[in-house]
Image 1 (cartoon, rainbow, N blue to C red):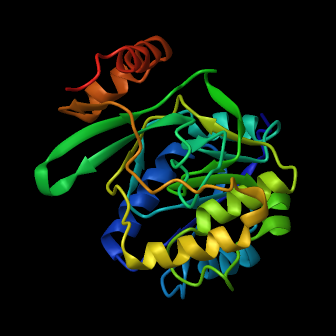
Image 2: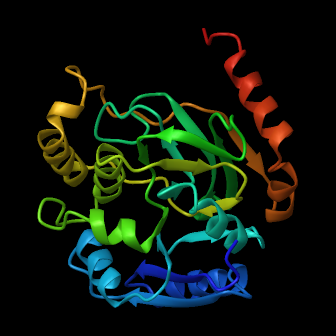
Length: 266
């Protein structure tokens, strides 16, 4: 780990409270590192906002973050700065086989993300395979809640703001384009993270899905699977503390194996 490594955290947000809470999270987990937090509050699209922030940023490592996540790992900065020596792009969940216009379309999924359902006051862990631990290699596409990369990779690949001029599919396009360009992608399984959203799959998502498939047609299978919620156990938790206590290699892997061995539903 380079003790002089610097981070640029990039957040597109129109919600002052969410931006403040997310900024405080990164201030806490990047304590001891040089960092800057760049807020883009008037993005025309996530791709456009992220590209604008790339031009403004000064850090060695760039983190493209949603404004509604909470990372519960005090070693985050050390882990990411070290791992981005071996990987080009890291995420929290992803797939080794891109087959459609969602990172979870293939079913060959890795990672763990907790979701907070604020209207129901509920915290639930979405879990997929976490082997190999702590970082899964061979990934082709990742979820966009938190994309971590080196400056040179971000400047080379960039986000396609011409095609994806809204708020969907920018992440899948960026990560899959990077994989096709020979970049090494990985999924970090050992970083507890909570996301206060499960995504939106409306008509706008369907529109950008068609654009994604058209752009990457030659790299995708002939038959594109339908979009469906990713399989995996939804494990409820009562607190952040209980969630972090479970976020261990053996417990997560046993939970995933138990899910795979469950009897078929009638």
